[in-house]
Amino acid sequence: MVSPAPGSGPRLHADTDVCAGAGQCVRAAPELFDQDDGGLVVLLAADVPQASLPRALDAVDLCPSGAIGLR
Amino acid sequence: MTPSAPRTPAAGESAEPVAFPLARSCPFSPPEAYAAMRGNGGLTRAAVPGGKEAWLVTGFDDVRTALSHPASSSDARHPAFPALGDGEQAVAAELRPFIRMDPPEHTRVRRMLVGEFTVRRVQAMRPAVEEICREQADHLLSLPAPADLVGEYANRVSTTVICRLLGVPMEDLEFFRRVTSVSGARSSTAAEVGAALSDLFGLIDRLIDEKAQDPGDDLISRLVNGPLARGEITRTSLLSQIGITLNAGHETSRNMIPLAALDLLRHPDQLELLREDPSLWAAAVDELLRHLSVADVITLRVATEDIPLEGATIPAGDGYIALLAAADHDPRAFPEPERLDITRTRRNHVAFGYGAHQCVGQNLGRLEIEVALRVLFEKAPGLRPAVPLEDLPLRSSSAIFGLEEVPVSW
Image (cartoon, rainbow over all chains, first blue to last red; front, side, top):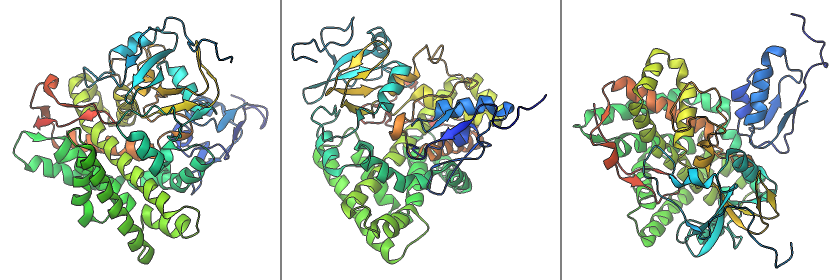
């Protein structure tokens, strides 16, 4: 399988201003998200590998505060 | 909206408001009336204690919308705030726990706490929680059967875990258990609850002083020597925030663990799946959370502007309650919602709420429930209820649903 060039696939964004620190994204996709010491979202990878796409969508759906999105 | 415009936002609404809260007839299902309310176009009018009326939101999508909309206010000082208990609104308006605040104030206080409950921090607590559960299971099983799974196991696990996290010394644990058993009991009078809360606040007040002098590796020490010392929070507010964290962290797990144990015993096929493949435990905990949704009526809100839902609109200025158990039993979101099925792939239940107020301790809650159940079934493979499930006394008047006691044999 050929991976798309970086930047051509779906990209994640995270907004720490609205993040509620629930940690749902880390549970859903630990390879894409982390929390800083204060509990707020840290994006580990903005470009989503194909294999992680279902988990990225899960994370977006589970986030209670609308802090993360995929576009 | 003109003053003469009808306030009725939905067709099919019954003329008489429903008396709320409603009792469960079965501990493992939401009140039966929720199912019929889903046909009301999304909103049902309810009469809540104290003579006020509020809207009940029951659909999964509607509940998520109603809890994440910017016009959703949690501020108990609003006259339309649909409090469910005598004096609940006055107490919340005075103490101002962060669960009853709006942004930006809510955001500021919540952010003092979220770092304590990150996925990583909670994972690091697993060995300590396992040790606590083993000790308490040994205690339970040392008693003559039948023994009470609530008082002799779940309550001891949840109080020990939350007190250790916050830094309540072990010598104060019995005092904390006594006080919270009074403040959360259906049989307690308002005066008894007031006295118990005052005792609890006295304990926290003393701990704030002690931890300023001699800080430990615990949540209260970090809040006292961080935000309080820096003047970012008043001592009065800190007392309230520690009080709600202790209470919420204790009562939820205390109620969930025995209900979840019984729910699995009622579904031996599901328990068998877990015995064959322990990696299913994480999913099982989320399914038990969905199925039982014990915090059903904690989500009291006021619409500060019109909040449009799927088939209706919550009018500006009205109080509403987004029913978590109703959402988690919406068949459009969870087919055959009454069935406990730990292999469900969809796990976006709202048992911990939704929006900016979603439970700050949810990761610890999941860990506690999982470990408490695993240890219990491992140490007592023959665990069974000692009375018919229909005879178990329900704890319906509390904000968090639970059972008063659960006699078990093994």
